[in-house]
Image (cartoon, rainbow, N blue to C red; front, side, top):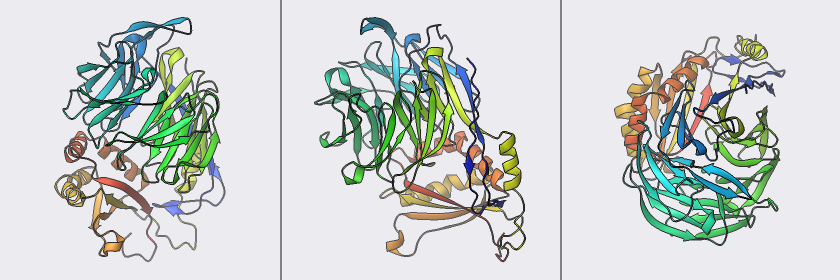
Length: 482
């Protein structure tokens, strides 16, 4: 089944950024196109898919394809699919219906992707670069969701059949060992991790509750009403910087203030059939696919927790469980057809017209410099005790890679005053010929294997940054630098 869907967005243009002159009247923004990627070996009855995962370091979507006994890895650059085979399958009966189960969930660790399989109740380690399947560990109960906890180098596995969470030691790359079990008073469903605060979130689907668990003490610290009703809550996502928790009910999504006892900040109707959700922090966008409603909703969250719909895109009946890239491209499971749906922004005829309008010269009387370069001011808040390591990474590696990809290094600074972030803040300025060059440079940099290796090596003991902010700037006509 081939699907192509255009969604036209309207937005009001309010200023000039990176040499782009914005009209004062609404214009058409890029449309969204949907295409499908067929999974190899998919039977006519479809492919059983549940949790999928996106590996940002290698730009790959991991798709456990249950009844095929494989994990299909989709390269986001060209949609090429590589199969990781060798996962056992088994037949189970549920509500009088027999079905074949196998690999069903994945989570991305440090150079390793961990795959949970219902076929033999195991979790296996797969090399994220070579896609080589490594050692597996069998669990006492069938795994559901998996989450890698970087701060403790553990894999947490929800096992709802015995009301528990299994904790696996993942401190040795490519190997797993049993560590602990957390017994709960309900069936855990969904998961999210706030590594900086050391918090693991899960739901009780059967009790309509949302829990917080301290990852070090392994104790439940808070138990909030999910307010989803009889069907209970499903997926979870978190914004660590804003300390917001996103909770999916079966037809809507909510934003909870995790710092104020789970206070509900906003809610948005999506449509029936939501399961898992995804959130892209750098975009402040939530992705929720409703299988019964056959649509994907993309919503933006502001600093107060208010959700605003960005787009609604038609998908397919049964399409659910989206993950998204930092560029805003979503990957949605289409189990009945044995495919992955790819939802990406694309310039249509209206979008091309908008681009022409938006790239016009500054209007007469404007104080903006014609032909100004695109400047980008970036502010990094370092993780505790990591500022010097961040300096070293820029000094020894990142700057050379920036230059390699055509970025002009204008300068680097730190605040002078302690109360303004002198001990944990780095500010720097880059310049590009224009916005398009800026976007291409960052895309090329982020996909450079040298950067992937540098980042992974520097973050063996944890991330170097807690927060990254970016501001795009256009020079004024009286600026000495344009």
